[in-house]
Length: 74
Image 1 (cartoon, rainbow, N blue to C red):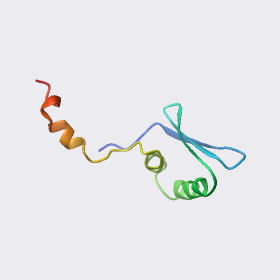
Image 2: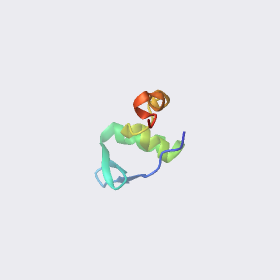
Image 3: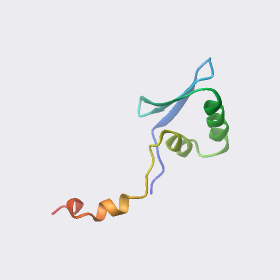
Image 4: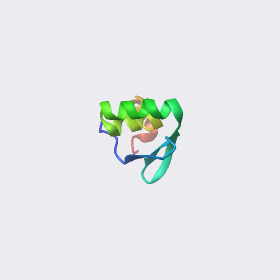
């Protein structure tokens, strides 16, 4: 499993945090959620934290999908 990439974030003057994925806004956090996000972003891997907050991360079913007959390339 590779680490997520392509995430960045911007903190606005009003305290709102916008998480950007590949140039597009993926999530907007306000108030307590923004504060919690900023606390987590300083404590861990930024890319992984942003992927988790936006929901853009692997869900665990990739192996099953790869083994499905439709994805075997026949």
